[in-house]
Image 1 (cartoon, rainbow, N blue to C red):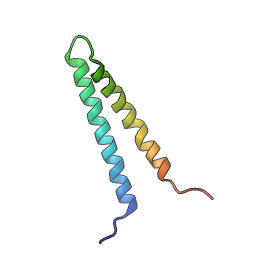
Image 2: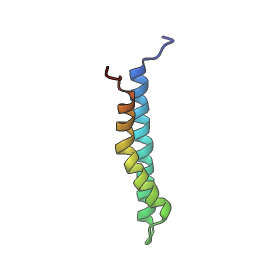
Image 3: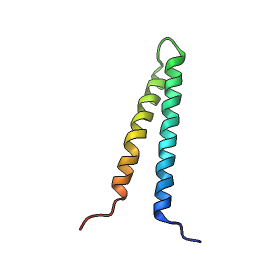
Image 4: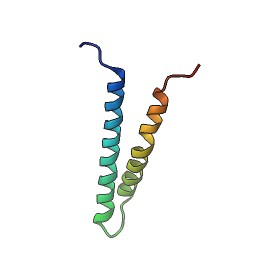
Length: 69
């Protein structure tokens, strides 16, 4: 019970990354949609969150793969 499964730890890390990026994207969309002129912060959060949502889990999974010998 003292040792945690590395696959479970990686799974939850991927889920947290997706959740955090999704929250950033939604917050950015709310900031952009709230005013007549989009604020730079809102646009940055929206784009960064969307890119993070789609790219970061894929990059992390590739990094964690076992090296092929």
